[in-house]
Image 1: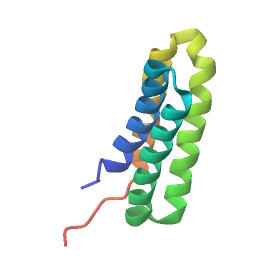
Image 2: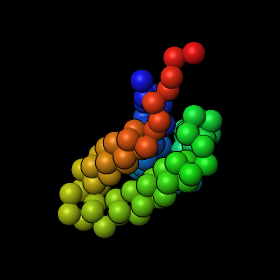
Image 3: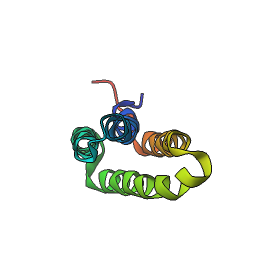
Length: 102
């Protein structure tokens, strides 16, 4: 069975990072939340999937973060955020290896 933790971590990092920054008007706080959640998720991904898949996951989150900005003018801030967060989570879930029963 695949672990949903890295995918959920990516979703929460992107979504909560923006939501915290938006709702508090403290961009640095949202950035801090994004970095902390993504780092914990990345460490877990590294432990179960190795360096290669972890680096691809990081690239997916960074590209999602970058893509959310221009998409915001088309879909609205939260529409863009939801779309990008879901796409990143699905891609990272697909990258997550199946875990064998121990």
